[in-house]
Length: 96
Image (cartoon, rainbow, N blue to C red; front, side, top):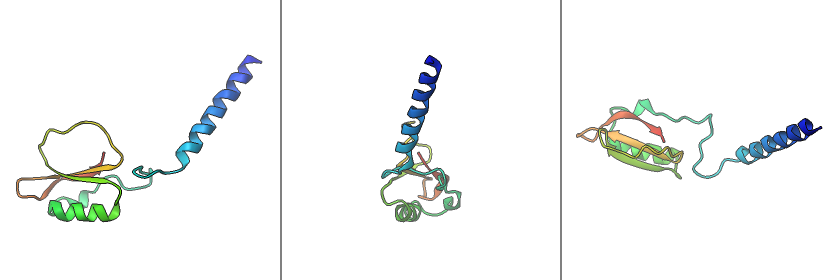
């Protein structure tokens, strides 16, 4: 009997957590959305930023030197555009 109560509570917890994850809040990315942009390598950082801002208006888009020391935190509402000394995108921008 105790096993069935535990199983019921576990099922209820899974159901509740699935329901809250079903809605996408501002800044969240759904698994189906693109998270990396290799086609932007070689274009100017400003041009890449403008394109990303038009696709993801609620995201924070940062242009940073490709070899800069950055925080390692993962943010689903941020894309960093890493550029070389000439301002050209050196690494594919990606969410995080």
